[in-house]
Image 1 (spheres, helix red, strand yellow):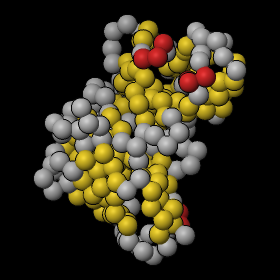
Image 2: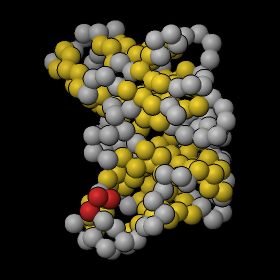
Image 3: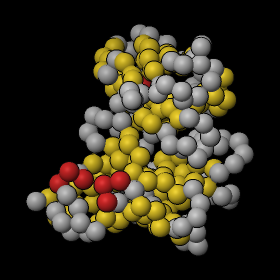
Image 4: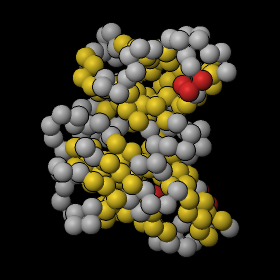
Length: 116
Length: 114
């Protein structure tokens, strides 16, 4: 079975500073990896996803993530954050094939708080 | 293009009462998901539909929860009777098809059981 661990429940950072939100996964089969963002009282919105190919994935709002198979990680990064990036970020995994294909397994989330 | 629509947005009921949530997915999306999100947690899948067929309901507590997607478009999730522990946000999502496709989420229904 797949699982996702987000190592930090909260990350405070100052505006214009870089940020990294960490995500590790476990799976015995190939997976697809996703990062979603959730603003207060809203649904989840996809930031980026890794399906195959280049391990560096670029997403919306200046975010990027790098898939590292040997370390089973998919950390999210942004070189310079804005106040508007304050939200909760979820890492998710799904199997690439077979039963339960398409079922997202989410981490517990990381609350990013950007301070002026 | 309209996104995933859910109603109601908020619901307060007393325990042992029934409650129903409605979801209308993005037009043309064959796959529909219901997720449960407890406070401080990530969403957890309850049920997945491919058209009108429930292809994965292994995480749905069938003693009190039920769902339907009769015409393969909109869907209803029901709880009867509700318990205090059911207080959570119920999210609906849809995708074109398959695990490579992006899931688009609705705003959710926030349920409070008193």
